[in-house]
Image (cartoon, rainbow, N blue to C red; front, side):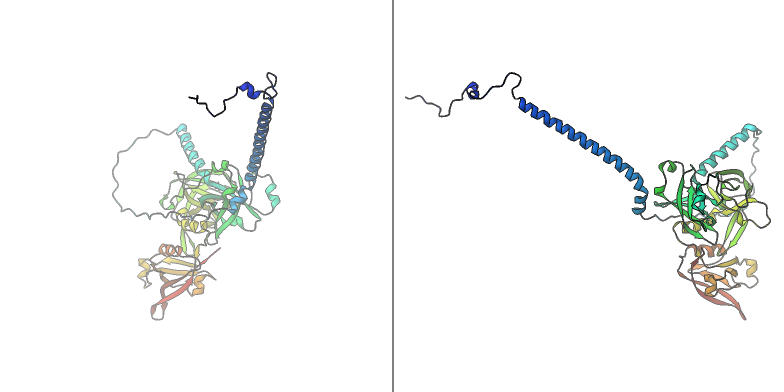
Length: 433
């Protein structure tokens, strides 16, 4: 039987396969392959370094471009500003008179110089913290005025940061500095200067809201400022500690200490009465700024123009409670509702004289919405819209809930030949700017 043989060819030895091909010398075998690999590795390295260099240059360029264009881009791609809401205060109820409790007399250690120093240090700490929200608003009449090296600016008033709407930092101050100027600037607590705009003003009280674009404010400044806490001027009592900040003595960055001299006086303005906070601290005739309590809360906006003629130059201003609604309207870019009525409450004593209960109209502003509607001195306003008017404060609150441009119905009574008769007016709510 024939032996079986594999039809596949037998493998030849390696030597036979390599026979016929030129052999390289020792150490140089495949040198051309190694050289190729080295060249490729070198090219890859050079490519990596080149890309890294391009990336570094691009990163530096992008960084500088972003820093330069950030304010512009912030202005273009800003979100809509959030609505500003100033929380309303609860009315303080008059406590019933009670017999004072007999308390044991507490004997205190006599005060000395150290006690005074500690008290002064404590007050200063409160003032420094509250001062983070106080700024200086400067009106520049000519560009060259801004280049002058001066520690203080003649055309300036104090302002306080009252809100942040997500787009702008909103600052409350007197509106007078915004009139007839080429530009406005705000100087923050850390000395940083930013351009500002006059957002909205109220000609009735002479107040205004100024705005600084958030993109204009550096990170270092954000760390040094904060929004003010608005307190309650209704809770102020005679003898309470008063801290004054801003420009109350005629120069910016001032700080003073004293006490509340009175909180009972009121100032008549169109469509409302505003409580005044008097202090025993002497100030400048043209001073501006804010009064702060021991909690660091703003309780008054200094306005020396509200002082009675001939009075001494003691610091005085609007109680913050009565102007919170004004601040809210202005912060949202809205005019403060105005129809131009000056009135007085019809008390029980006055009512006994035959005058109906409501708001007695003493006077009406010339060219005001009230005059245009036909409201006259001597009329008694009994309702505004759906709100019944029993006092001046109720009338004011009802008007503040209206919107500028809307028509409201004002009802009341007017004295005629046979006594008081019903009257009704359609009034278009305006704004005094």
